[in-house]
Length: 184
Image (cartoon, helix red, strand yellow):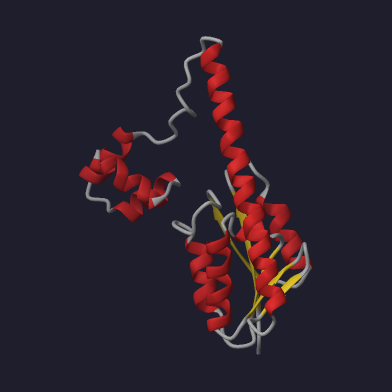
């Protein structure tokens, strides 16, 4: 029996994940995997990795938009290739793209939307740089966003014998963040 695995991604916790999940279920997903984080890289997208590993022949990986999967041409094509290697289908809801490796148009569309994602990523970074420059020109000190991770707490939990995974779960942060703090 084939299954349709939905995949949702938001860039930050302040975004609405529930609407993506509800729409994916509405358009055919039987289960929804989701990650929070930057779409500029496949690194750290554990739920996407799990969904890709669970795909079996005839299954479908469903995303609402190409940029929810990746904002980079090579990453989007890598995802498509992994889906095809599993003898499954990649389906994007809007714009309607179905990619199973048998049609060159599916690959052309993935490439095109990957390129559009790369352009969006470039524009986002350019706007961010202009905003930082404007803040500095006004005399504001740009310090980035406020720290959300308390290094003291992480070190205390580590001293109590907790591992990085347990610390990350307890604090609701990524394991890589725990490792970064402990290495500093």
